Length: 178
Image (cartoon, rainbow, N blue to C red):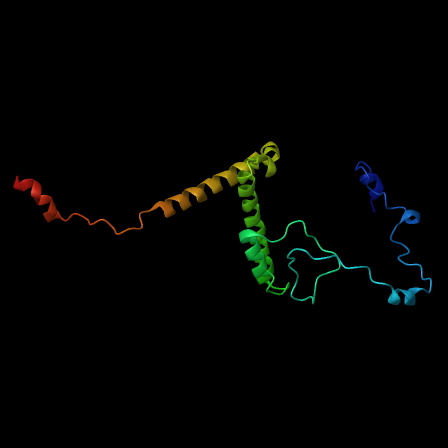
């Protein structure tokens, strides 16, 4: 067998947990006999709820601690409320949550514009690094995006009204009457 420590020695930090004397996960537990005392502990006070918090329909209530930094709002909030009607084991829960994240991103851009801040979308999306390290992939994605946008514009801008009547050959005879 090859000498693995020497093979990866050039990687900074590799093997820091290889010393069995300095292994933080062993022994997992030192039995002290106090396990029964854990059953009678005093519960800490629950976090107060001042805003809407969505939680799984598989749980009877809220967890002891939860995040309140971004309550559901707007169209993304409506989509999130819809998603939490379904079990966590179904696509009906996770796919709407993914869609809600994308909608929330767009809502955030509009919110920035509303407050007078123009976001630097190219920097936030990492396009500078993408251009530096993956020009071909970025160009391919930009081309595909432009094609999709062009197709959407063409499809949406077609005249949806009544179609214009085609001129029949006999309609063209009025020129000959003069």
